[in-house]
Amino acid sequence: MNNYYYIIAGLPVLSHEWKPGEQTPEIIRQEILEQCSEKDRAVIGLLESGFVDENLTAGFYRTALAHKNRFIREYFRFDLNVKNAKVRYLNEALGRDPKKDVIVLDEEAPQEVFEEAAKLDTILHGNDILERERGIDDLMWEKIEDMTTYDYFDIEAVLAFLAKLHIVERWYILDEKTGREMFRKLVDEVRGTFKGVRFDAK
Image 1 (cartoon, helix red, strand yellow):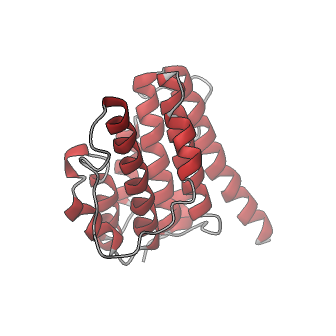
Image 2: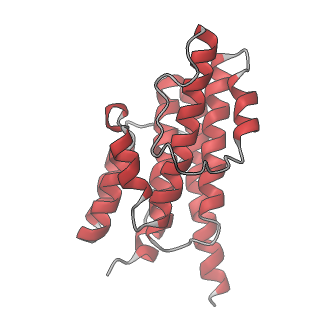
């Protein structure tokens, strides 16, 4: 059985001068994996495969949305909604068929309500490309937090950390200053949760 308390408590402490060269996201991911059971490593592996563009097929989403793990199901449902919205926006900008390249898993199934659709549409129609990307990632970050409000020391909390870590990693490529700020926020969030739960338990 995994000691999630130990895994989360052992996440790296961030200094103000933190950079990927000191402890890269890949090293952090590997350290987490080494402390997980084979079953949880398989779940993490599925999550990680969802950050590789060429893997994001209809088949992948069907597998993810039918998974036993709640975080995997909810995260990739949201991810699919966001990606389809981005495709429709691009089709609109290029004057193409709005349905072109949109992933539809079941034509006959009733469409689920995408509550963040209006907010995402506003973000997508922004003029600044960098701000648009930041807005999308902020929306993803908020969704992850909403999905794991009551998850402290479980696999869902670990998956949430890893999903956020990918957002941070991407921003180091786009904008190092923003990436550093987001990583600080991520570690502070986890540390705050750890300390809060430990205090309440006394």
